[in-house]
Amino acid sequence: MKVSRLTHILLAVLVTATLLLAACQPAATPEPTATPTQAPTNPPVPPSPTPEPPTATPEPAIGSPEHPIKVLFVPSVDANVIVSGGKIMADALNKATGLTFEVSVPTSYAATIEEMCASPKDTIGFIPGLGYVLANQLCGVDVAFKAVRFGSDVYWAQILVPRDSDIKELKDLDGKKWGYTDPGSTSGYLVPLAMFKDAGIKPGESVETGGHPQAVKAVYNGEVDFATTFYTPPLKPADQPKWKEGDAPDIPDELVPTCKVTEDKKNIDCSGWTVLDARRNIREEAPDVIQKVRVLAISPAIPNDTLSFGPEFPADLRAQIEKALVEFAKTEDWQKSIGSQDFYGWTGLSPAKDADYDFVRKMVEAAGITLESLGK
Image 1 (cartoon, rainbow, N blue to C red):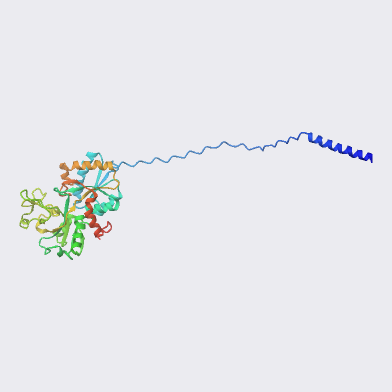
Image 2 (cartoon, helix red, strand yellow):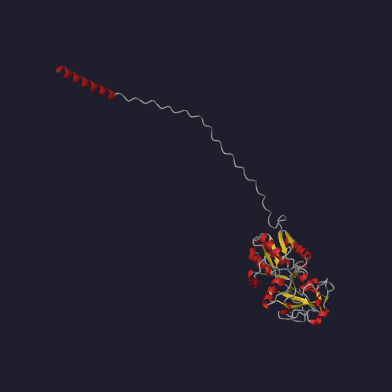
C-alpha cells in the first residue's frame, strides 16, 4: 500500500512537470504564406485623342455681296418699272451704307408677306396697310415708315365705273361684276370689301386683275362693271384751294373733255387740274381714260402703305438703312425711283408705328380676313 501510494505521487509530480515544461516552450513561428506570383501588367494605354469636328464655314454677313438684303415690292404697278426704279434705290443705299441689296417683285401681295416671314433676318418690304397687318400678325414684321404723297400720309380707295354707265351710287353695284387688284391690297380689296358689307352690297362675279393699272384697264375695256383701286386727290391749279376730304373726288364734269396727256407723257392735265389716281397709270396706252372712266365714290382715309422690316432684322443695320432712306428721299434720284408717279408715287417718308394701322386691323378682324383666305 505504501509503495503504491508513493508511485501515484511520483506520477503526479512527473505529469505536472511535463506540463510546465511544455508551457515554457516558445510558440512555433508560422511559416510565411507565399504570395502568389502575379503576371506582369502592361502600362495603361492613353486614350486616343478625339478628332476635332471640321470647322464650320461661317455664314456670310447680312448685307454682304454673298448675302444681300432682300428688298421686296408688291406688284401693284408694272414690274419693269419697279425693278428699274428699285435698282436706283438699291444703288443709293449701297453707296450710303456699304451694304448690298437685291430687289425683287414677288408674284402677289401674299407671296411678299410669306417671303418676309420665311426670311426674317434679311428682308425689307414695301407693303400696304393690309399686308402689313397680316404680316405683323403672322410673324411680327415691324413697320418703320409710311408713305407721304403730296403732303399727306393717308390715301383712299376709289370705285371706278365706265363714264357712260348707269351705275350712279353704291347700291347700284349689287350683283355687278367686280374687278379688284389683288386680295392683299388695302385700297384695291380690303377697304372696298368693308364698304360693300356696310352697305349690304353683294357684288356678282369677282375678278382678280393683278394690279391697279390692270383694274383700270378692265373698266376701260368693258371687262368688268366696276373696279377698285387707290385714289389720290387731283392737284388743283395754284389759284384754287387744295382738295380736301368731302370734296367731289373726280375732275369737274365741264373739264373732262379737256383732259389730255401732257407733252412729256408724265401726267394727265385737265385745264390745270392734274390727275393722280390710278387712272393716270394707263395714260399712254389709253390717253382718253378720263373721258371713259369716272370715279363713283371713295372710301374713308386709309394710312399710307409702309416700309417694314423682317421681324429679326439686325437693329444696327436697320438704323443705317433708315437714315440712308431719309437722306435718299431728299435727292433727285428718289423721283426716278419710288417717288416716280409711275412707281409708288411716294413724295416723302413719315415715321410710322404699329398703332397707326389699328384702323386697318379692325377691318381685317371684322371681315375675318387671313393670309390664307385672301381673295376667297
